[in-house]
Image 1 (tube, one colour):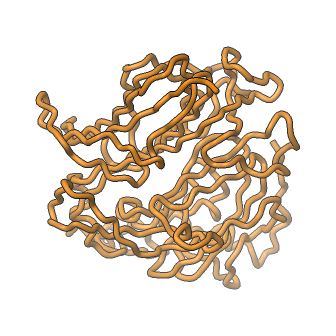
Image 2 (tube, helix red, strand yellow):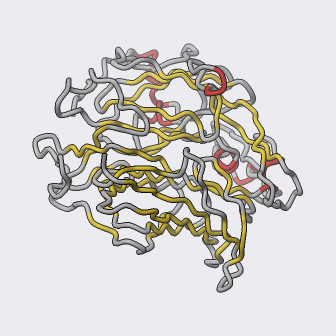
Length: 403
């Protein structure tokens, strides 16, 4: 792990390091207080860019709407329709790169939290513990652990994430056959590439670099919406921010209903699950299998398939794969890799064995099919408080013969 020492802090700058409530004002700055030279092209994101999610026929909501408002991240360097999206445009970074992320705000005030990266407080983007801004700010961080993460707005968090202000963030390990990170470019989304874990039973595992090759990659982001929330404004039911007394109870707004979450729209990676039946045992709706190639996976016998799970919702998710899968990373931490190799290791979840994740968790699973076929994947969305099953979403992994 590369350690970048912080430079001496001039007396006039000390307040900027200590003040994490409002943007630095000594003097006003728009970038890192202790800037380091980036070793990776600048990442740019704007928020929020308004949009509408059109609901397919058969999806009914509490509000009766057929289009749901979503707030989106925009990549201003991307072409055309790829600029703004829900979920936000995927970010890929080589492990060890020094990153500058230039973030602009088009409406209201926002920030970005780099979930799981754990940079300095000034760059962590945690609402009311750092700051929100209305123009732009340059975040700086250096990810030193390869795996799956995500980024999201952390202002009025429960609402802004629900409205769609999140996206995937992947930190790639070095290619054992190529230049060392951070000089290498990121791997292409969808594969092929390399993941990090200690898995000697996997073909191609490199014990010198703790890397595993994969041919196919999928980023699965299960989520759910409560349509009643999607008519709210940015600051609704939000605590007022008094920097001199941030926890004063008189600044809290208790008129809201953000503590009552009743989802009526269910998604995987931004694709809506359309109900086509009822689970007779529970009364939950069951979605038709999602065939959209942004979700459904196609691979060949013998290929390594890397499944990146990001739980972006507010229910308890129960996942079931119809094929054996090896868990190789949890919450951005590759298993069996120093310095945690003494107490972590990859493990197999047998086919049709459910496992559960709660909001904000992110796991990496590796699947190596040995036979052709269509293998189901199901997501059950349970109420966190009473366990009620709301919905079952489905998609597939289709495996063809080796070529």
